[in-house]
Length: 280
Length: 280
DNA sequence: CGAAGTATTGACGGGCGTCAATATCAGTGG
DNA sequence: CCACTGATATTGACGCCCGTCAATACTTCG
Image 1 (cartoon, rainbow over the protein chains, first blue to last red):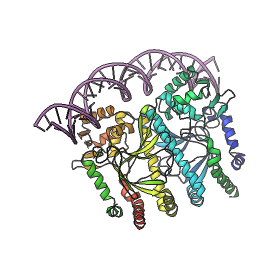
Image 2: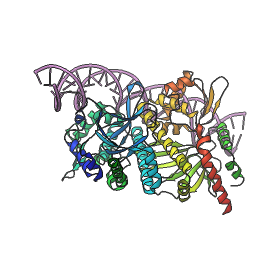
Image 3: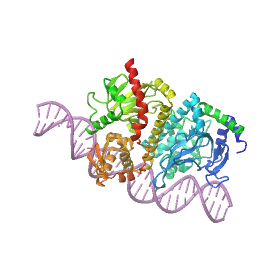
């Protein structure tokens, strides 16, 4: 927890840099087991909460008193279906607010898909901010809409595309909301933050199929598998066309514009909150 | 608009009754071809808009100046995927507001799944109401959340359930937001408002499979097929368990509580709007 | 080096999408 | 009243994608 307050008051850059750095030295899952055995809270100072992979953020009916602001990391909204089958229904990305009007019925829960850093806000406070600041309200509405759009995409993809098409689309879109290092020759290296089971459960397929498809794509020289967590995308055009991605960002990611749009507004008083914390 | 003002200012009963009545004399699709050949505007007086089945409500990028209040009928949000394959991503039910922050990218559009009666509201007006009336704002938020929950259910169902399970779940849930006549012996007759292609495209399967499953369910004495648009549900327990519906309304419908929750608020100034119209 | 976790590859089988044929029904005109 | 037409619903036959199960390779940490 030490020294992390600084990052809060500064811009988002450090967080992104940290994310990228983490992911670069191996897929983030392997980083998970540092201190605690598996999926426990790593640090909790004041309003901040740092989580390891697979730790639970929200569950159950009772709407908690808090909403959570995602400072870094990726969360997954999931549901354990009958027979222990899990399905990942949505991802939440840095800069997003979760838990505002979430019911989480039907065995749904929110867990960390990567190590995460969250920021707690009392729902009452948040409401106050919301009513006071029209810009923030608009921003929040836009964010809700974006999450809805992403879910629309996922629903469509699961229903209308075959597993190979879904995975191709996901890889293409992932370049916008996961660490992606473009190279001089037009290719680029994608750092896949999600584990194989997470990918499989998100795209409603199996790890075996995911593995088969990635290797098939490698044979087709569309991608290159550097290691299980790093894909070099050789032919983005082809990848996008297989995944029926309209080139014009299809709705899922749009996290690229994150820094300039929502973060500015939300981070501003995330910083304010930190100051309050210091004062108290 | 003549005389319809009365219905507006009164309760919702007339609308529901009309819906039920329509559906009872044959599935609403057959009612579609009255005056206009196929899917055209049937009536458009002032702020009100009556549509036949399959007519288009919204499409394209450009956010229209209006939001629409659904007075009666069912709308479908759909997307034509590559290769002409259609997918129904969501249904909108009476009492709901659509078109507020809708992008409708990627070939998505909103069409009438049954004859519909809509009510137009200028987005500016609506915003004004929204900021003035906190209750309305809360109501609107709740509605958005509900649509999100429904989409979550659909995503889960398509990803985690087999076609027969999905259809069973849909039938069970449909009793809550489609005309359903409970009988003395515990059974009940469901008037299916959607056409076979709509059901199939919503559940991400085919009309053939839908047909096979309904008849299989009939063999199992879970339902009874009165005619293609009317199913008598013999064993609701069984139906719900096949569809993995938690008995405790799973999120999709909850349109039963419609009358007391949202309608009261929204209908109130739907009436106000009508009055304004008269004044102008 | 052994053990555990994760990723990959192989073999098998069934569910369900696809295509085609047939059934059912409403409406029309003779 | 019946043949004809078109829309919709149903039934049958076929094939293959992909989920399932099992075995193996790879990596990391004791």
